[in-house]
Length: 268
Image (cartoon, rainbow, N blue to C red):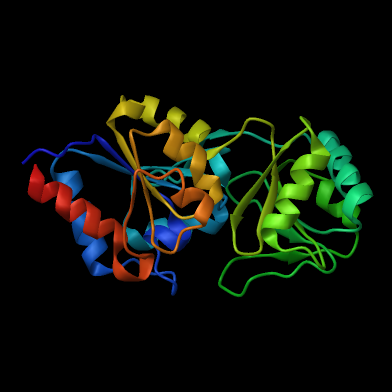
């Protein structure tokens, strides 16, 4: 049996994972069938490695994963970080001062670089519930003391879309701003995206963009869709992603990835 793509790229939250952070048996089976047919599966997530590793281990996933919004290429089988790009802290600080000059004080968190990089949470930042490790800091200077992959921002009044739009307008070409999920607006190195990391990982696998099908649910998946031959948005996806998707499948809760992969396998 052949499969029309050599690479299946899947986002994690809201896409591969159900809302309880598990992967359904049906989706696991569909991915196993696709890899048996000769395609590679690669996870492409906004989460940094420390927040992704336990999920990959639970899946028995041993391939490459693109983490940290494209900043990190991680070999899950070897528990090894292959590439890592960090945020220029001076530029990030300047960018944040520009944003705060426009819309007032922000609450901040930051993701430290490395296999065991902590997520540092500053005063007032609302952390989503879950098993993810976070370290609370009272002194904001602590956040900038070691290399970072990204900075998370929240505003007391603006919603995610409004905050991302305002921040993007304020920072100019200093950094990039992305909305990565509910309550998750991030400051990233300029030019970094999931497409950046995915292209690096694909090159290691000897696979091209034209051989890739990608699944996602948030605006941070837009560059990955642009890079891939075929982009599939989940039914629960952000409207901005649906607008650029080649197709929309059912939701993450209803095995949207499996629905598409099963259809492609039947057609091949």
